[in-house]
View 1 (cartoon, rainbow, N blue to C red):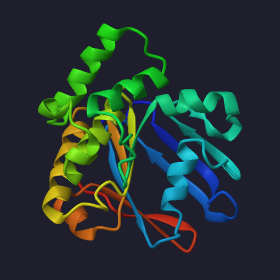
View 2: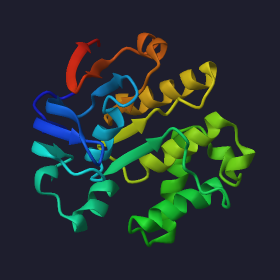
View 3: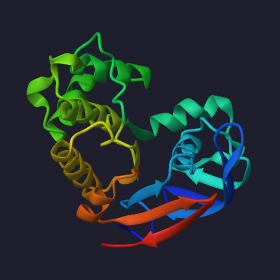
View 4: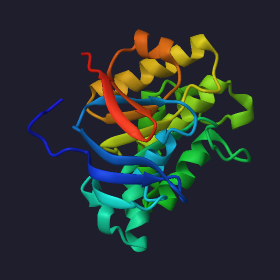
Length: 229
């Protein structure tokens, strides 16, 4: 982690909504390149709302915010696709296209983010599948994969555009304990190579097993409850 680097996320006095009503008030939070940060809290506390604000889905109600050099305070609709291309996003339910192979899922994502060179796309797909340990599963369809393998495919998709920041919303929520640990090891391996990660989770045992910075949300207030190397 480089403490002199430009932060990948900054909130200053930010009010966050769930799309309709405020759920987090006066949020002050800075995340630096290479940090791993857990967002914890009860259902409805605003964890996912923060993620949706970072992706431009929920507008900022008040205050200031920046993510990977995009100003969320004055974010224009036409900027949102470019913002999302600069982020890696991993969902609890994988959100893979079930009617095509893993490789074709990744190719679809590359085309959607502006890639056109077939050779370059093939090379990048090979790289990210190798990074997540799925090189031998490129031609499988999602239904032929285990839950853990589907999440690895989703993480590969998140890596395609070499993001500075990955947003992972309950990425282990649908996985058994052993598989969840495998996904955590993969995320921490990615993090050690320099990618910042914000992970929403309820799983305290995973936090204890894979310690990192912990931010908790309660009654509309955000506070840091642990900072561990």
